[in-house]
Length: 106
Image (cartoon, rainbow, N blue to C red; front, side):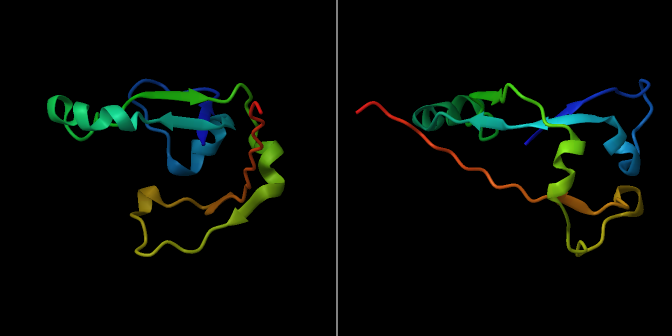
């Protein structure tokens, strides 16, 4: 899932965790493609972190947080707890199902 930001912050000024949602314009599908045939070859010259770095694509549509509101669900308490500056008052996520139908040539 990709996040599209609506507006940023002043250079050098952090966005607090509880204010982050105010900066989100919407969400899109994000696919991080990997080239399994090339990974083994790339691993030696580039190292393990770039071995899967092939391409990323996003969906042509953006869904706003308001449209996803009916799918919002509470998350369980995090264990171990996060440091205070990382704690979010709204511990929630979206319960989404994705279904794909492919039609191939016969």
